[in-house]
Image 1 (tube, rainbow, N blue to C red):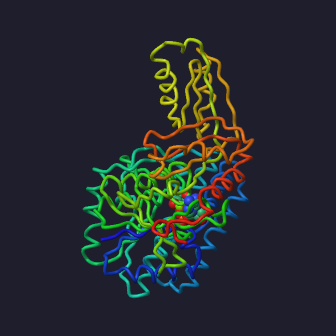
Image 2 (cartoon, rainbow, N blue to C red):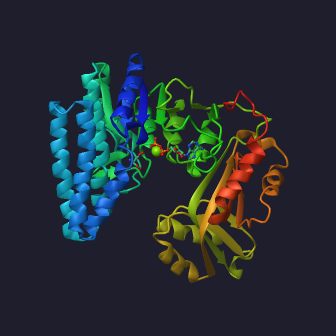
Image 3 (spheres, rainbow, N blue to C red):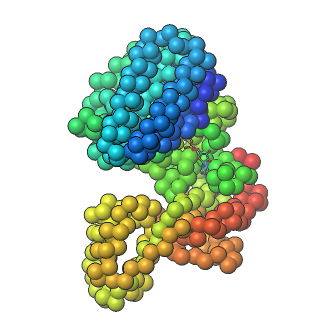
Length: 459
Ligand code: ADP
Ligand code: ASP
Ligand code: MG
């Protein structure tokens, strides 16, 4: 069997959903399970709705609920599926739930992470039900399966992590029988349920992670991530329009890229695939016959083309801790990282000197608390509006002079922190965010404007 995941743009309107249906049709002999995101922009609208409710803006809250439903109803009318009894029921439930949750937030006057997840999960509930109903009208036995009956997660609302053993039991009970009947299960991406039965979400863009996780539960032969780009490209096309498609990548390379901000894949997407050795394709739902990017254990290595892609992460904060107590002392770094750990704030890049340590973070929710604690034994400096730029490629490992080649194009751009990943397949550094486009464009020119290896890049 295979898992097929369709992102927000791939299901954004009726014609997109028709395209998705024909893509699924072309794969029926492979026994697909389908994972779907909310229709494009709906998650943002749900979050805005939650905020309006928390601010007690009733007018905006009600307008927003009705706009969200109108958009789905238009698609349902266009697809001519309004009479599907299961869909009708789902729609009614969604309308009730959405109104009830919004009212709860309104009365509380604040948004708890739990209520936020409940509300925002409605986007995927609607899109998955619509797609399943449309498949049924096209002679495909589409069956909505609630992801909450399959994916068990921990209780970190907004960034929950799926639990394998617990989920595997549920997949056996709730998903495998449907696949055995040769029906096509359609599940919400992004959404899970904790062990207390509460709705959770896996973080923005989390449907990719749902797809590979479900793939690992079902021992899928492959996972297909269908999006609005031709595959993984040499850079984000919104920053570098001439970016090229990468035909093959290794798990390691794609995982680094995803972690360092390439939005095309949620940062955790590759983890389940790596554990079970499941090949992952990234494909374009508007060009289903193209071959996309294939991510496998080995990828294809090329000595000649050492850098495969450039990723970036914005809104980065640098924290520099300086203390003479660090000189010759052991345990100092442990003390610092223990503080970040207690405030559940991941550190991305680290660089040390004799008396100071600089670290980058992208979650600043607990920054004040962290600084207060660090302040007890050191001087703390905080700098905002930074960006991490990350170059990834297996071939970088054995190539001397990489750093020189990279930094020679940066001219007068101040570099705040440099890190060569322990795996040696990435080099990352921090710059001022305002120089981001310029830096990524110059690096892209340097590494990708010449003749490219056709075995690796689509040229
Ligand atoms: P989906 O809704 O299908 O999950 P996303 O918007 O989450 O799609 O991800 C696709 C987007 O990722 C692309 O439109 C592109 O702007 C962005 N992106 C960033 N880096 C890359 C990259 N290296 N390759 C391809 N796309 C990238
Ligand atoms: N709909 C969610 C989001 O916009 C999850 C996803 O698209 O993967 O973040
Ligand atoms: Mg996405």
